[in-house]
Image 1 (tube, rainbow, N blue to C red):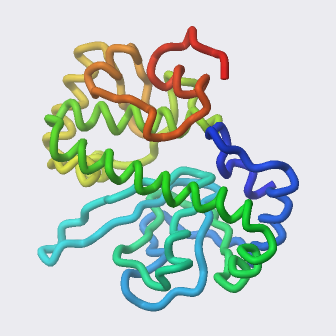
Image 2: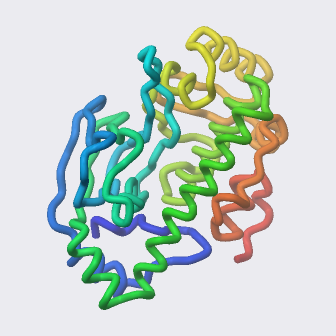
Length: 250
């Protein structure tokens, strides 16, 4: 099923029947190349996008040309469900890697809202989750130093990918550049390179190419002041994401 990762390992899960309903509501699937703009800031929109494969970003470009990533999306994320009520975006949506997406027209979402209000509330959870993550990203930029920011971002990505089965809790693929990490963390490419070297030398985390290998998760979590509570994961997944692997009960 194309929508199988939606709400996976969250405190709220979609039933098989709800997933079937969601599958029937999608209008088409599309692919985009890495770097391609998927939704542009400003113009009216009448569709919303569910990420199936790859990584996507929401970003804002400053007048001087600098790009600021304000969100990174993983498979199962409804990237711009907020466009359903807003009808236009105040940011761009782009493909960080080659991606496959499912397209839902707003007309189909209106029918879904009328016919299955419970499912729509469950989907709206994803947008509320976006807001919770956005608050953490503001906290990260405002309150943490460089090595803490990068550590926090890596812990978050590990947790989110763990929730959809794309991390084993210590190693995962993160096919983005150091410049992308810098745009997430408000750092220069040179500064990101220095921080990643410090994390490697401290035997906390090793980032090589697109592979991230966490060498000491509990210490990396401490370094990042990372608490996965804002991700609203199932308790067993949250425990693993926080380096408390012994806590396995839900």
